[in-house]
Image (tube, rainbow, N blue to C red; front, side):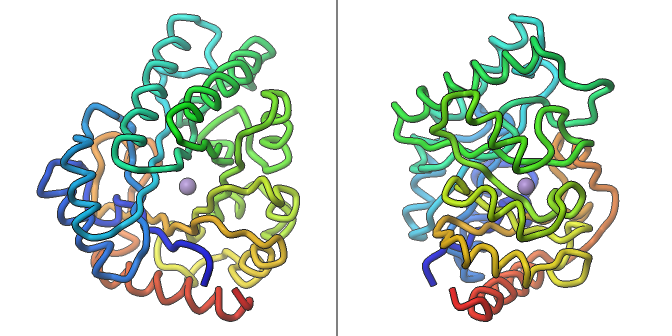
Length: 286
Ligand code: MN
């Protein structure tokens, strides 16, 4: 199997204190994953030295992700808000590099949440300019950037792979596409088309079910998705992302409207996801 299989830390914990980080990293390793995705919504809440030591102790790879908020929204037409967004992204790049993450992904181009109106030309210009800056800033730190395509209730910038590719072209290239099956289920024509369109520019993948719970129990067509990954020769990480009201993050759980307990046993969920992903990779010849 050529893909690293990852797990989002929020399956285990809602914060990143040392006991929480230890629990998340130990549990991710113990349930057979290669990589843990550490959210950096507040980069100052992640102690890089402690995190790096725990990762090294368990031989676990790491990726980092975040979404911006209203005060740091780089799709804003207010330059002060955009500057705060750049400062937050710069801090996230620094933490990612310090803990050994070679990838930063997520909604790095806008606030995470429902917008009241479409994106205007000035807002889009700010996103394009900021993403070109972020690419260069991150590259200098040895970090590659993948921009996540999310559904209409979580951004007004890009809701499909095609829109994201156009944005990246406008920013001068050099940025990857990050696809997530939960969002694709809402916005794309199907589970193969978006993967095919992204092609060699696909840099990160989230697998999540349509209700964000156990894989294979919702509406996502995983056979079609994994077959498309194989057909495009995708070699990057495949990270399981799942949320339940059983594990609460102070801000992210509310932003993502995690109101239900789609599961209550993280260990059982993680073991199931690891096996599900291995089976699908095997079935598609990966
Ligand atoms: Mn995602």
